[in-house]
Length: 100
Image 1 (cartoon, rainbow, N blue to C red):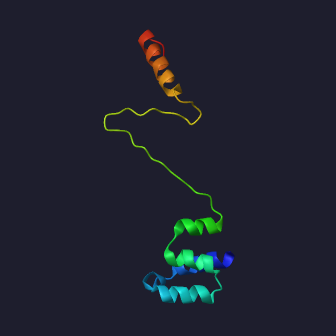
Image 2 (cartoon, helix red, strand yellow):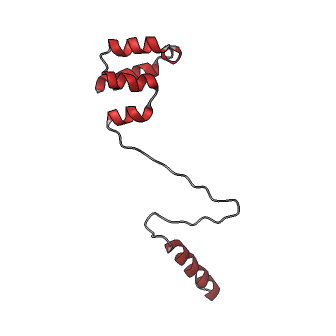
Image 3 (tube, rainbow, N blue to C red):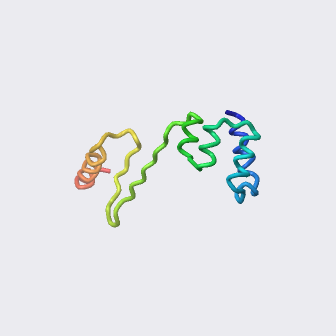
């Protein structure tokens, strides 16, 4: 596996690989002794397949921006659903009573 990582590192640092055709890349991978499954994933540009071969778990990130004019709730990561709304209501009640 380290041969694969080393190859990817060296190829990423060499600008000629960006313009190289598939045959040249295949010959280089074969010359380095990269296993067929790895070669196929690299030549196909299959990032998910390569991640699977490297044993990396799937990573998913979702960003859900607020709609224009919509106030965002704040949470420090330890609150449960609805806790933010309760905290906001408590703060507004304290302000109405004159408490700070």
